[in-house]
Length: 454
Figure (cartoon, rainbow, N blue to C red):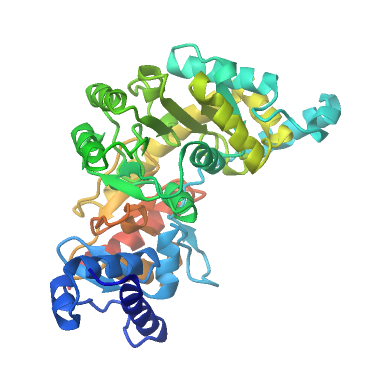
């Protein structure tokens, strides 16, 4: 194996060639064996070189096609799933992020602020809150989650966080150590990837079945890493981006593997509210080892920045310590607004309406994408659209950017060393109207159909 300096020499030389434009975006890099033979390297060293280029957002691997150069601007966006329309584009449509805000929510926000200002305890809102949140906010969340789950949730096992991403950050801080591997699905949430990269936490990609993370593959990963694997991050209910819902039998098998190898499970339920008849959360099946994050960004609004983190009682002190080390506590004003809407049924009403909105927009997408092989859960706010050869995902994304439309390449979700399918994720939740969405989706379909005719 090449010495570290030699390995980095190749990384830096290729990086400079890409940044300078000597290696143009879309250029296919040599097969790893050919590159190894040409430079006197081990194939495993070339694998590391290409993986580092991909980590920097300067290359992308595609199933059955090879590894391609990616422009620095496109790569930086894909690495953090922060695709946006071309700067200055008029009439831009965001199909990269889901911000499903209902028209009536602004008035509800205005009214809640008035009521808080006129009758709330403003002194309390100006003071530090307990690390886990005010007891009244934890009670409101626990009662709502108990209704959702059909089983009691104790306020004492719940922590109020400043949004879902903050809750995940707290969990990494509490549970993970630099250099110690964490298991994730082969396609996973970019926000978890970004946090892990900042902390030098290696991610172990676990293959997936149609229902989600494969328990037998997780068993293999545990044996491969010989006791070093302690944490698993997963999205069993409405996986992002695949839209799968893990069946109960598969959840039970996953829990069995976790108990056999003493794994901690982190369950991200960001989109779970869209599935009315979901199997029980992992937290109910293995309460002694499961942490669940339930964010209000999608059920309520992304600007609310409130999420609820449920933890096993024995491990709560570590979560509280991580809260103290991060933001001390969630903003009391936002937590109180969330509690008000949980108590009076407002969020339940919004969830009902957002489920209907998601189903309606999925129907629109299926019509627009007819014959293109798109896939997705019928009640989700996103859909996957394959990109036919010879066109590449980057080309489709760039072509749509020039039309003022932002989408996300699926490789933004790929775990390290994984090659994502040639597809784009099309988010359906942000456009203000069905008509605006339909117009944008027809543009997307036109670009992909044209790609298929090349």
